[in-house]
Amino acid sequence: QVQLVESGGGLVQPGGSLRLSCAASGSSFRLYDMGWYRQGPGKQRELVASVTSGGITNYAESVKGRFTISRDNAKNTMYLQMSSLKFEDTAVYYCNKNSRIRFQWGQGTQVTVSS
Image 1 (cartoon, one colour):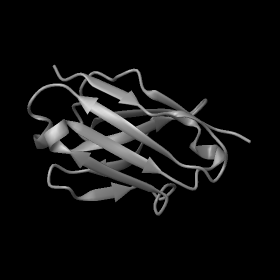
Image 2 (tube, rainbow, N blue to C red; image 1 turned 45 degrees about the horizontal axis):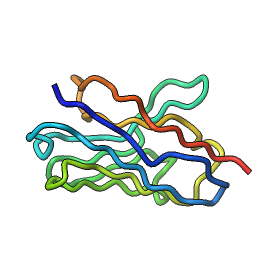
Image 3 (tube, rainbow, N blue to C red; image 1 turned 180 degrees about the vertical axis):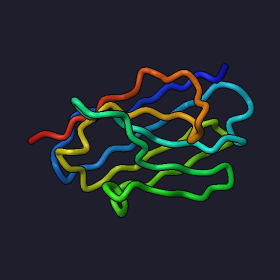
């Protein structure tokens, strides 16, 4: 079973930036389509960005133009560069497969946008 560890969250002011990382165990990371998800207070978890095994990216409309997803298969790591952060980006951010069948969720990393 692949284990996922998210990091890089924190407290940031509106308009600020953060870079999240997702470290995956195992040797097959490069084969998976992956995504960043988030769950805001009182909201359901949603997919905000995805990257295929081949590097094709896709974004939710709410983050398009502000977030950039990338992956480094040699390091078994995926990233989410977030800029122009808004209050509504406050959430716990998780990484996982972009698939109907996912790995066990990690603990996530908290992003709080506040002035």
